Amino acid sequence: MDLVRFGRNVTRPPDANRQMTSSSPRGAVIALVGLLGVLLSPSVALAEGDVVKLALTPIGSPGLYFDLTMRPGETQSLAVRLSNAGTAAIAARTYAADVYTIINGGFGGLLRDDARTGTTKWLDYPTVVLQLPAGQGIQRKFTVAVPTDAGPGEYITSLVLENDEPISGDGSVSLDQIVRTAIAVVVTVPGKRSPGLAIGVATHEVVAGRSVVSIAVENTGNVRLKPVVTFALLDATGAQVSQASVQMDTFYAHTKTFVEVSLAALLLPGAYAVRLSLDDLAQGVRADSAAISLIVDANAEAPTGGAVGTSPAGVRQDRGEGQVSLAGLGLALVVGLVLGGALAGLMILVVWRHSRPRTRRT
Amino acid sequence: MDTTSVLRRFVLGLGTSAMLIATLAGPAVAADTVTQGITTGVLSASVANLTLPSVPYQNLAHDVTSTMTLTVDDSTNSNAGWGVTIQAAGFVYTDGAGTPNATYDIPAADFAVTSAADPLTLAGHLASNVAATGPEVATTFVAGSLSSPRRTLEATAGYGQGTYTQALGVSLTIPAMSQVGTYVGLLTVTFVAAP
Image (cartoon, rainbow over all chains, first blue to last red; front, side, top):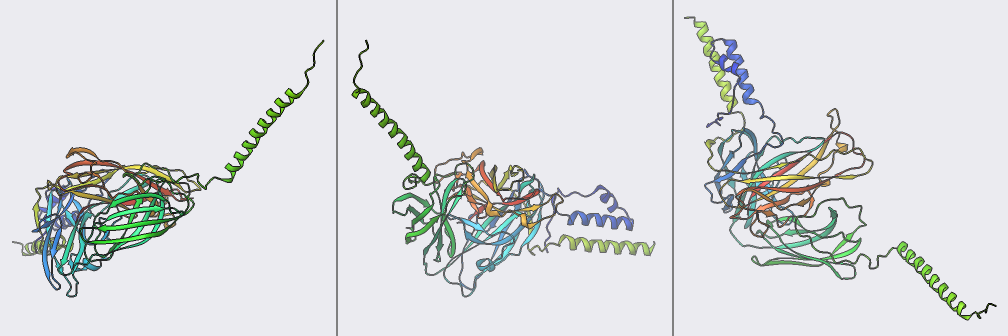
């Protein structure tokens, strides 16, 4: 069995060094215990500001991830390089992880404690924590075995490498940090390509003082897609309140996600309808939904926050139309009555003074 | 020659060797690993300024906002492009004595990224906000809860060889009557190589 060799950064207690050359049995035991302590002790905890520089690189495969074509029942042996380009040794955890589609498309990999399902089970890649010396790496072999009953289409899973111990934050409200690198393992089983899309329900939430509309979508087909999303929001009268167009990132086969559209303002409470279409011209698939119901509840006080990073969809909504409050109406009425009364009184006074006979002084 | 002494030393050496071999092979490493030095750079990332401001006890729910700084370094010389996502787990509460109490944990859904600023270039290719190049704010980025991963920064193939920072606005909703103590969440930053 080839052994993992530790780099020059591993240190030993100076006493242990001297003791190891001694011919004394007690010295040998002490040295052994000391050496075991060094070898078995966990890495020093990373502190905020430390940079994790781990890399996961396919070996013998072009590109930055594995892209395979395999038939049902076929098995391939592959290899990956796990490297530590940092300045300190690190305990690095590596594992296989299910892949899903994140909001608006793109790669998402499950975390270390999540279950392995589906395509991930095709990999023989046990979870392990490795001590990676600074500036060194190891090669690791694994296999991919396609089940005999696998249908045609695209399947995806991933390999992940991350710091085993989180980088510690500081303060009474803080964040520890895991930094990881993930590479995809894509397996294409030859056969009929059947793209498909479906649209689900819509929901509303408030983020940083703005409305965000979220619509559930699904790639029901067996190939990955990159559809263009066209979004329109209509109020209860059918008037268009907002519109947007979003280019989704990769929407993986057999996955569900959400399309989210951030609006430039807060929607008024009420009933709306979302008109949504997903269109992937290159794959020749489209899905449309003419009227997805959306209910916006009366807003709680929106939290303060900065502007959204990308341009939110404009909102055309007259916040006064049909929404004038009773208090405002009452105030306007009172003011009108007072002014009208004053004007009427002034006119009466003028007319009366003109109608009075003038009295000559003697 | 003292046979007993020689024998004792031999046994001790044999035992030491055996334990050393067992220890070095301890973790379940695959049978076919080879160690080698690396000559190419890697993608790396870190998020600084993760400490949110402390707040006094309040009977009402309230928000705490801050800005995190994401630093990304692509030293791979691959020009293959990259993407970075961030996500968070809930904040775990411990009292002044270090005793946890899940009743006061803050769920991940209450921690949101509210903004992703245009990246700044520290070295290498200049960041660009022009679509289809980058590095730039991810075209799919939408502010929202970090209980779901959010892609905040990306560079397309041919771009992004360098070091960049990005300011990320965050907001944590502290539930009403949250107890005095320490709240620690977990942020996961992921580099992705995928179609």
